[in-house]
Structure formats: structure tokens, C-alpha cells
Length: 140
Image 1: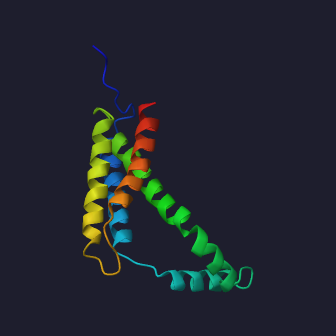
Image 2: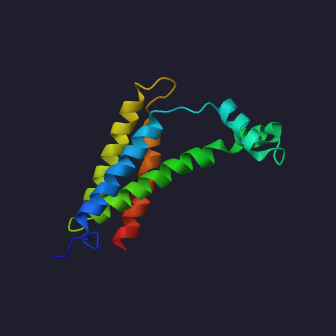
């Protein structure tokens, strides 16, 4: 019988639990907010103080926003999955992955009630890329 691949990490359960719950809270809070593209571009223009023009950044952002926004989705769920693996260290790696996917799904459902946001199946799939990446890394 083949052994089940598990998250092989040190058992500092309380610390990893707290970090997992904290990161889940960060994810929840960021999904409760909306930054309008125009306000974001204006803010970057102010911070850059002339090094980058607002118009130039606006042109860049209109073409490349998805790399940063969707990349953040991948990153935040890869981090959540890794933290869950550390917390649930004696469990098979698919269990923290399943928890992370369930959380991603619940977060998208939650966004249905956030003004100017929406829940999207495609975002759960993008979150899943981060979950699978971290799960494979942790199993390895």
C-alpha cells in the first residue's frame, strides 16, 4: 500500500493556526474593499511625484492590470495553502488544499454582497492555481 503524501513540517500548531487565521482575515478584508482603477492610477501618480506620469501609468495599467490583480489571487491562496499545510502537518496534503479551495469559494460568494464587487468562478479557478502550486511544493 502506498503512503499518503502529507505536509511534512514542524508541529508548531498554535502559531501556524494563528497565522492561517490571520491570513484568511487579511484575504477577507481585502475582498471587502474596492479600489477603483482611476483612483489607483491617480494615487500612483502622486506617489511617483513626476517619475511616472499619471497618463503613462494609466496606459500601462489598462494593459497589464490582470497580471498584478490575478497574480495577487494566486499568491494569496498559495500562502494560505502553505500556512494550512504547516497547521495541519499530520494530515494528507490534499486536506489543506481542499480547505483553501473551500475558502476561496466562500470568499467569492461573500463578494456577491460587496458593492462594486462580484463573485466569479474564474477567480476560484485562479485561486486554485495558487492552491495547487503550494500543495505540490509542500508535498515535494
